Amino acid sequence: MAWSRRARKDERPDAAAARLDLDEEGSPAAAALDALAALVFSGSVGRGRLLPLLAIFDREVGTIEEDDADFDQLHLARMDWALCEANIPGGSPGDTWAWRAIHGEIEGKQLPPSWDAAARSLCGIFEVFPGEPAWVRDRLSGLMLRLSDSIGPWPKLPPDESAALWELRLVPDGAGGFRMARAPIDYPLELLRVLEHELPRRFASPRWPAVQELRKARLRYFRAGGRTPIARLLRFR
Image (cartoon, rainbow, N blue to C red; front, side, top):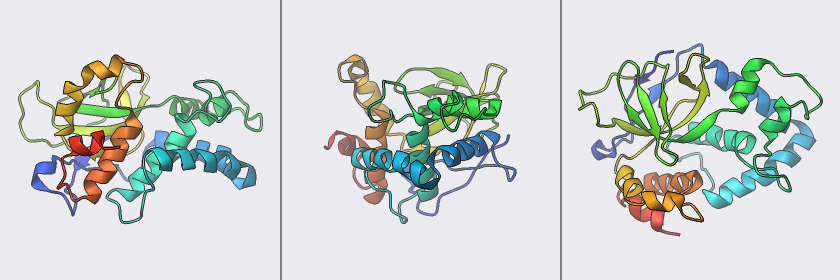
């Protein structure tokens, strides 16, 4: 699947923002995520499952408004988080609605294999190293993954220099690589400096920062028009 860059209308030259368009046929993993969410969160019972989790997201990250940059992508990220990452209240760690769905605990339905892969998708903030193939590194876990999607074009960069910092949701392609389930959400590259500086805190208790804290800082950053360094907003409680 090919991805191409396009400039954002409100992009600042120093924001190092990258935007991508998904091919018109869309992503099978995105369709599977949407179908899983419909299975779990539809109807009055589904809303009862969903609303407490969205309240947690809004408390941890902030309420997403229609005029926020990348509103559609942020809305999808919020829903995917409720489905795949958020622990069910009262459940054990790792007990998510996606996990219950693929184990037949939602209406006892057997789900297609593509739904299983989507439910097990990985989400993180990734440093992007372009090339054929491109590689991405999760800046919180250190996990390095090969992208099967074609991305670019990019300006020529040294091989060890990253081109972008993206929030990605990835699914395995069955051949050792990963594909993007959703269009990336870009973060300012300046955030890399604070993540590198604070690396030891990733192994402390509690770990810092979490993805939710990075999402919150990004939301504040773009609402401020990029005028306040995102590192300062990340540290601001």
